[in-house]
Length: 92
Image (cartoon, rainbow, N blue to C red):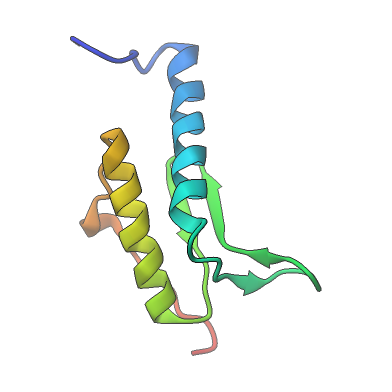
């Protein structure tokens, strides 16, 4: 390894989570489209480790979010693998 932090270091997990948090905040700040969670709150995404769920009532909004996420992640050197993207339609 020439640059970066090894995966077995505690710091690497913390750095990854900080970067993912920044990416998600930056990628979703312009398009605040989510699902109604509570009376005054909306849920925009769910993050767990390296898995991300983008939530929306509209397919076009999800596409915008994925494009924004890929662009923002690219600025940090992370790549969104298109073959791993899955969609779930509920009550559609």
